[in-house]
Image 1 (spheres, helix red, strand yellow):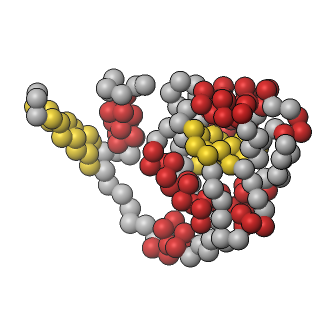
Image 2 (cartoon, one colour):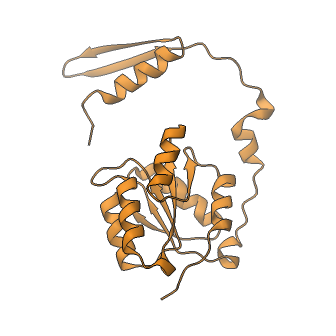
Length: 192
């Protein structure tokens, strides 16, 4: 929706300059552009890195059989879809996919889902509006648990998620440890 407007570059500039760095661009018409940035970062403490912690994480492949759920993943980026889908598979779950909020509303009207993992910022219809519509249209006894997927984890964004009816927030990048918590806490709904 916003591709080609320069929004990404403006965001990147704000991030780099906010970290005390510099960003530059060299562009040749008809050939392309090269973007460079420089920032000074402290070395991470290796034992405390997320990568190390996640390497030690043990998936429970029997969770899907022990605690069956119908899951809808609403995400417009294919790479994110694939990552979430693979994580769910390692827990023993399959899922349906929707690429925007409008498609999510249509799928939720046609099928009963226990859990909907909802990206907040998408084309066609954002996750906030999609969540409101899904929860308004679904009968009380079969309303799904909707969990936000967002890279924006500010208090304001979290409150906006809750105000739209979402029950919680999974911050991107999603970790299997946090995903498992929501899977275990999600109650199965009506199977009608």
